[in-house]
Length: 149
Image (cartoon, rainbow, N blue to C red; front, side, top):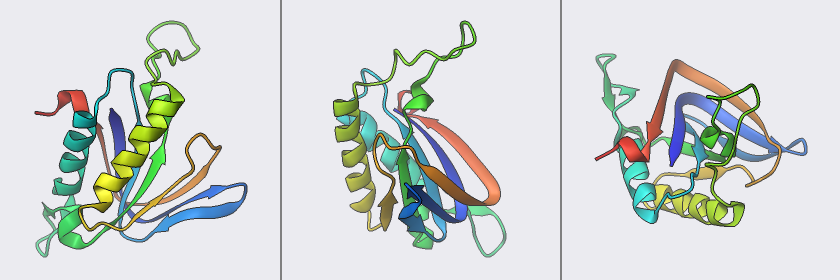
């Protein structure tokens, strides 16, 4: 499971021109589910993300987590994160999980983030979405559950 997390001042997502998710300060999380991912990957990834100290403290040091600052999370499914561009010029999505399973894991990911008392908003799984992000920093990280202990 892979996520691109961006520290934001605000973020929103639209489907068919209508806002379906919107947050203030927090994290915009793009989530890709790969074949072979497990529920353990969800737990590892969420625990890392919500506790990652990437928000400024009173001394302008990245020393506070999403939980510490009472931030929100906008979580958006993005199967292209599992894409492979090593060969040719057209991405391969062979590593992307079956949509039914990916949606189940996406929903569980959102619920596990919310279980940490974080206000969660989301996009619509499988929909074409327009995402507006007001980056804070910018501060962006790629987190892969397979690379976490």
